Length: 375
Image 1: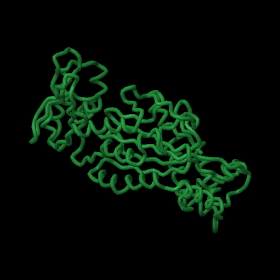
Image 2: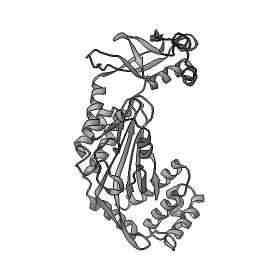
Image 3: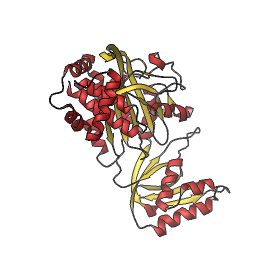
Image 4: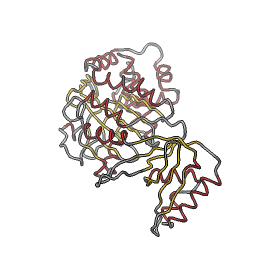
């Protein structure tokens, strides 16, 4: 089995204002963003960067559309997108602390002179400040076919299926299968101006795995991670898996049986969310634990019919990987692969030795499909 680092990276990098201690709190923040945001279609030439009155590189954006005009600030992310539209390296403008007037002229020349007319989709956020004054913030500028999956929609279904994320079956996990301490420091719910991340687990109702290793039984917990970006910084990705525990650094240990769904933010993304993700989450919340135990036992009892090497090559896409999986299983269990569960064990044992996470995840995902066959 392998180790996942995604939650650990979030734990190490997120500031306090991007950490949430319950699903209700996270959902409220997402709802506020959605309710006060508007997506507007316009041409790139309807956007213009304005300099500030300071000497340093500080700029705003002016927009003009059929639904209104205004001037707003840019986030770190949307400034980078505007630079990309203008064909200007954002790192250069930031690192050199270019004066605002020069930075604005450089980007505008690229937007209005060097680039032809193109349609864009702009995400505008209208929050209120501490004095209740309306503000304008451009969160992103994407292509005309961009299809946003809103964090509010994600967290709405999570709250309906799993409650507050602290008292239900799937909740914020604690360290080494302990209880979550309720602090921002140890949460696994995050959201910022660029993307959001969630990791929930059912560590109380663990899956019993007979003869898991060296003839001894063991248990695994169910968990899932979700990453999303309303502004185009990443795809929507849902990954469900079984695991042993999460350590103090938020590393997730002994992970296997991947099931992953990834959605690009195209025009069809909201429809795929409704058709694929929402039913999957409902099934995850309502699936009897006995079904998983049954799948494991069936896999352990299901003898591979026919040639084992051909079976492995068909399931993992290439013959070159077959001897590597067979050798990994023999080192793990001391005998050749005979059953479907043996194939899963060998594949995950081989995967955890790989350096590249993408390759590991693919092999673990294919191994998860084998276990699903046993249901």
